[in-house]
Image 1 (cartoon, rainbow, N blue to C red):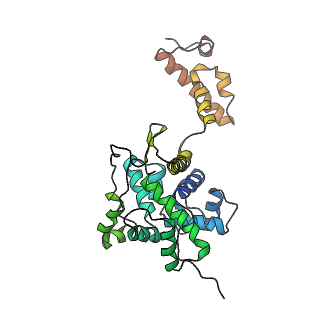
Image 2: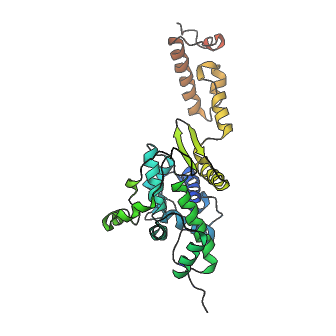
Image 3: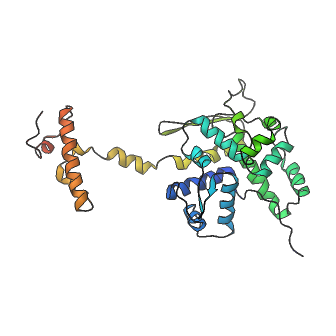
Amino acid sequence: MARPRSPNYPAISLPEAIERLHKLFKRAQRQTITREQAAEAMGYDGLHGGSLGALSALLKFGLLEKGANGVRVSDRGIAIIAPEDDEERNLAFADAAFSPSLFKELTERFLGGMPSDEKLRSYLIRKNFSSSALDRVIRSYRETMELVSDEGPGYTFDPTIIQSVGTERETDMAGGVGASQFRPQAPPSVLTASVLRVSFTDDRLEVTAGLIDAEAVDRLIKVLEANKPLLPQKADIAELQAEPEPWQVRRGAFVAKASDHNAHVERMELHRVAVMDAVRKGKPVPDEVRADYPDVTD
């Protein structure tokens, strides 16, 4: 007897999908690449059940789009990776969370808030999900909803707004919920529930949190992990801070980093221009650097 096949659902949650998206974008940017290349870029060792499930989930969330010869990062994915502002990123989170038809259906079914695992299990069984898939589906749905409700940067999700979404809007969004209805809201004046706000200012991740239970701490850890790829490594920052300006080092030392003849010529000219500009602006150019260009005067 054949095993029952569960209806379609994202094999991984939205937070994990976003983490995989960052890895893929770091390798391929917005180029169209094959599924095999996409799987490797996301950290898998080729195409198999796990990598195919992850690719399918990113497509279901609308983070990737299919091309003639493969897949590439979608506009929604870019809005999450490199948003113009927090609002664009918030709306992309919301659109992604409700793109999977199952997640939209579950949220419409349980408008009173996040249901218990028992209620979700009962509903999914009636929808012909196999018992082996139940825990994965519930975990993926719960983590996704936690991202847009408690961990979505700077807004609070109200599931009752789905009732006002019409058929035309759903068609336009390719199955997504009208994310334009999600807007930043102020947290309650009395802390009766955990509040978490995440935003980017300049090159730093700013987090404001009011946590009232252990589960909220776990959710904070998840959202920090999801945003971690957006920040540079500490070693990279230290290297950038330690790198001197061209006019602060001798010409020979600066040119020595050239990889070939053309680069050597380019760095020679770059160093001369940098020193001339620094002298013109009155910067403290070291005497030994000025000695390389006796014709350059204040």
